[in-house]
Amino acid sequence: MTIKANTGQSRQKIILLISLVLHLAISISFAFFWAIRSDEAYTMHTTSGDLSLAIDRAWGFENQPPVYFALLSIWRDIHPSLFFARFFSIICIALTTLFIPGLIRRYAPGTKLWLVLLLFLFNPYTIYIAIDARTYALMILMGVNAMIFFHDGFIKENPQIQTKLMYALLGLLGLMTHYYFAFLFVANGLVLLLTRPWKETLSYGLYMLIPVAGLILIIPELSGQVNSTSSGEGYQGSFLQTGKFVLKMIDEHFTLGKIPFIHFFRLAIIGILSLVISRDFRKIIKNKGKEASPLLIILITLFMTFAMIHWLLGPLFVELKYRYLLLLPMVLLIGYILSLSSEKWPYLLFIPVILLVYGLGFNYRFSPFYKVEDYKGISAFIEIHESNNQPIMVYNAVEAMVLPFHYHGKNEIYSIPVPIDFDQRWDHQKWILRSEEQVQKVFESVPTPIDTVWFLSNGKESYGNISYNRHYLENYIRHNYTVIDSQKFEKRMTLQLLKKKKQRITHRLQGFPIKNFSREKDPVRGQIWVEKDFIPQIFVRLCVVATQSLTRRREKTINSYQYFIPNGMRIFRFISIRKPWHRSSQKPELK
Image (cartoon, rainbow, N blue to C red; front, side, top):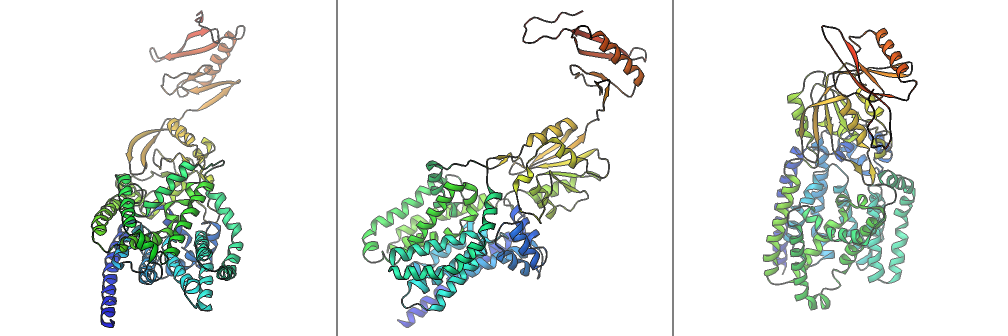
């Protein structure tokens, strides 16, 4: 028995090592070539200074607890590059993999290790988290350790007080890393409430006073995050939207949500698992029902918690990246269900389906090599075609922040309407346009006169239910610039080369507006269009006085007039002087 056990352990170690090496090869290569995304740019700015600056910006700008940003700030002292910041997340996922065998022994005994490693390490969602310079990989590592300490401290027979204390301290550390870590405490408490005597639940509550005290301290910061991230007033959830969201949660951690034929694959995965459960239902009830009950309770509680948040606050608070706590419990439960059968047909059905799903997920998420916007391609296009004195106007502030990580050209980048201030709280409402004067102020802030300008826009009309009022920006550009060239990139990113139109100078003489006529047959009722460069101003004044005297007795309006040049002289000719009418089908009488 001992020899077989040692052989089995050696085989598991070899499988674990090979799987981890393959995962690291994929993650490191992707992390090196992949373009930066906006959240990673936030991280790079937040951790660009010393430790105290990282903590201040975590609370003040990121609206998040500071543990991850403090650790990354220390880590980046070794090397400040984006790849090295991503490498911290890669290490967190690699360490998580080392704890998976212990997690299987505690929550899903009998589950095949190679199946769990396949579902976890080569999952597109896991790769996505591993090469993202954000807090989610660290939270997955903390979540695994929290589940292990919870089992050893509260479910295992004769637990040690030190283990319970370690779980409480890890809970406090998790809350100081991300708020959603508290959901795992609720799920674990429900496990004890449903499966253990009430005294153990009471003991669990006493130890949870340590992280709860930390949660009370950060409630003001949590309310600030809800206000700044809110998608607009008056959000009302519906059963239909929340139901669709629950169905998406089942497969998004494997499909990333947007692969072709997603409904077919969702039904295939659920159908195969349901078929295995139905065939081995008696075995589950008699022998193994209690083994996986804590895992099942944790998973159901997390599902219900995210569904409730979706109902109350909206989909922005339960995006895929925030649901990191669901990944490993789902992987363990799927592996456990498949391992119930002693036959080979479940694997022959499930493995080809999941590999096809993973392949489509990789093609959707990782081809081409950027996560959301192609900032690298945009920067390369500008650098090839730009000239001196061609500033780059970017809407909005997020794109203006990210673009310098890839753009190394000869022109300055300007943010519309205002650049991001990392010393203040992040608030998307600062980027809402209020008037055309905001846009004009940015264009006029260029220190040297410009004739052509680059304009980059993300095409976003709103954030949740809040409109960005893009029409102010579009109206200003349409009235003052002409589009010379336009290039579209992925995710509605549009790059345009604009040429400034000839300026129109407005004068007001005796209360009557006069504009220079820039050779466009576009007269405006009640206005005299003249060309200032050729007509003396004294002659213009005489024309205005004469026009007003002709229209004083009767309320007549100058509809339009034209001027032409016979033999080098400019002469005014009135086309029509008509009596104004309202809602009348009768035409004006010309005199």
